[in-house]
Length: 158
Image 1: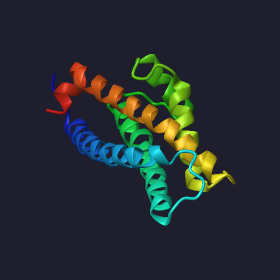
Image 2 (image 1 turned 180 degrees about the horizontal axis):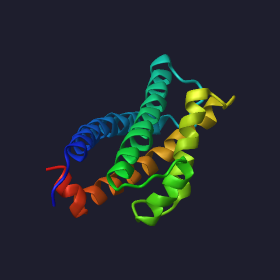
Image 3 (image 1 turned 90 degrees about the horizontal axis):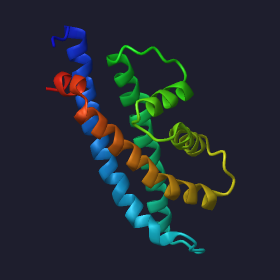
């Protein structure tokens, strides 16, 4: 299978973004481990509040890398013109990268909540991030497996 120069460039961008995503998952996983013991704690110390802030920022950044960069590149390479985020989520479900499109939609919704601080109850936002972090990491692992096992992506990433 031969690829034109544009596909090679896009493939290179995908490779670089996947490396960024992996690093992002590593720091997100670290923050997740630091914050799990804080659930339900009433009087948080300043360093604990910082840890929660780091977790929410890392969750947001990681979900952005996944949904706004990598998924878009995959769709470009597969020559799929899917404009809306919801339609992209359903397409990933169709490819069996994710089991339920609503998982990705919920992740994106929580990311938006973090970015725009819609929640007046930050403890609820924190709980949401803790609940969705494992899901986000699972979706990323599933996507990585799809890419690693798909012959098209294997060839383009070589």
